Image (cartoon, rainbow, N blue to C red; front, side, top):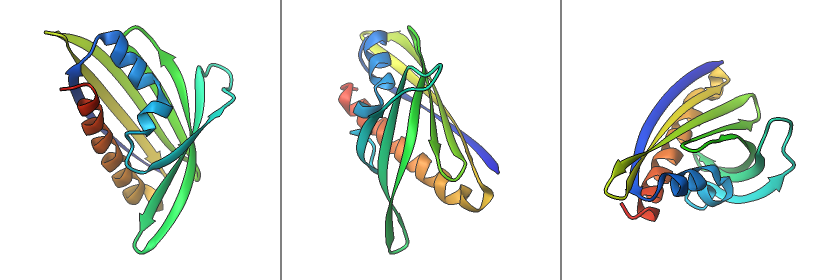
Length: 146
């Protein structure tokens, strides 16, 4: 198993509560995800606020394939959101979001990602995760009218 991390900050026009609402809404976020093609609500397990199945379309060379993974909303606080995504085989992406008011009707959304995957898959999967999150960050900034 290998682990990697990355982080980014999104800025835009919103209240802290509006930004938290957006970052906690996995189905809405997937409309901004470049690889996602669908979602389905799942029954949340213990200590999970909301669970969503997300289906994405990936490419590896000329081959295209679909994957479905589960995203669990673990925490939705006044200025904080935590999620964890599980995909087979043994791949986990943890996201921790902090939102702060930076004045003049703007917020800063700080996202920290921890990604773990089996070593043979790590480089490909970690690269796709970074690509998808960079694209989503750009789309969220557009949505918030940066």
